[in-house]
Amino acid sequence: MLVVRGFGAVAGVLATLVASRMLGADAVGIVSLALTIVTVLATVSRLGMDSALVRFIGVHAAHDEWGQVKGVFGLAQKWSGRASLGVALILFLSAGLLAQYA
Image (cartoon, rainbow, N blue to C red):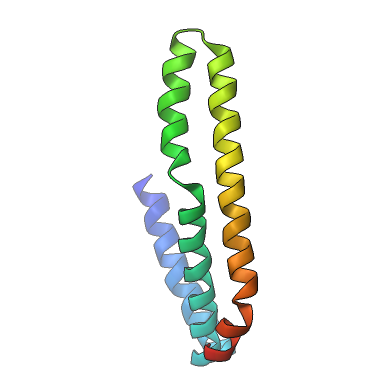
């Protein structure tokens, strides 16, 4: 696993170097900013549901409470879906502002 992560880090650095040579520093900066914004917003929109699902689904599945598993999963889908739509709407509405200052 460590080898894969190391390879991924090296590949990321090489991709950044190639992109900066091909696109220029300004364009790479804009792409990096866009990826950072999307990554942060994706993390926010999950609302920690990935960790909660592991915990609660494991507990309910261990006790053969499959209705509870379905309920927890549905609730997580509903709330993280709503948060994702809200984040997407905010990002869409602020696109002009982001384009102005990027």
